[in-house]
Length: 182
Image (cartoon, rainbow, N blue to C red):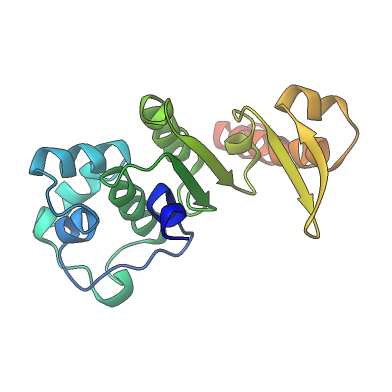
């Protein structure tokens, strides 16, 4: 059991944050992390610029349970924290749900180098997050109902292709509305 805990990192949708500074919250998993390591982890998690925008920067005190941060910022603190405590297996439990799609993509691209020697499980409802996975497993009521790559699952007439249609149409409609197209 302890062996497993030492080798698996979990990033939760609602991470626990301590009533300490942002710097301390990121570095808490690795007390030997240098400032440079903390800043790099925050950058990979698309959080560094947000932190610099706070009046006290990395010395900003995070209120109990992170009340001073948005949901997406809390999730990104948890991602940065895990990057400082490298594990061979990472589980993202819907931990990109509170960030917008562009930030989600930015974080995942920045993590690509980091992930080369890591097995990553991403639990998500966002198709654009799932579509780049090597293998996608679709669950319905706790049962595996589909499995394959993005292309393979689109050819099947199942839940995944239905979600793809719904989510891409919503994004298309949103983009068109921004352009003033009706």
